[in-house]
Length: 249
Image (cartoon, helix red, strand yellow):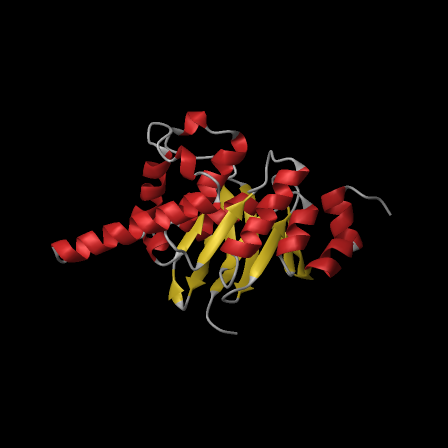
């Protein structure tokens, strides 16, 4: 397997409670994985560990052959990993455009000269405007987030994550609160502009959304992996349907 994300025997405990227990996963460059499971199964905890928002009790995390275990969120972002949040975390006092600039700064590097700084700033502006246009937010660039709908806020969260041009993006329930039509439109945008050649892990409770985007699906239950394989096969597995969908028999 080419070097991508590798997670080995990852565990996370809060006091005596295990949020994750012995989780291992390999993600190849350009691969998209769906991550599903009941509420409280450890999905967001997993994303927090990979992105440096929390530190594992045991285990190791590698990306492109480099160990990320215990590194800061900013350091991990600079390696090319970005994420969105289930509970939206936008800067309410900044404009939409300034929120996007914050996303760029997560991976920005110091400039050695004025001309290098100017070129980087121009490239940043072009990238931001292109992303805002892609997510139909260009007309709201100078507005603050309070003027946006829930769907637009989720689009801003995604666009901001993409502003850093990540190699791997982790999406935590990107379609939450969206109507079926809005969910379908988001899936199309992801297919056309986000996931084309980029690695991704997508947490989502909407099974059709996962099925449309991920060829492979990983299932968690009570912090442990219970299934990993082709999405169509995993979603038909009787144990997965019993635990995740509440089906009997």
